[in-house]
Image (cartoon, rainbow, N blue to C red; front, side):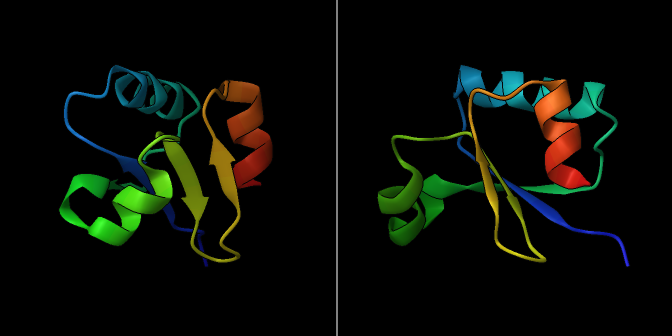
Length: 76
């Protein structure tokens, strides 16, 4: 079974756009973007730390800044 990933983000976040580029360059294409602006709880939790990549299998999180090498280590 393949791991699923969430990318906590919001519209207009230039760091989130950079994070998406890193994920694409690392070959990570199976992730869901979660807009924290639509949920008060997520906004409270991630409002000052987005973008954050989260593994759904073990709830581990990788906080920005991250690079391709760090993403590859995180997903494997």
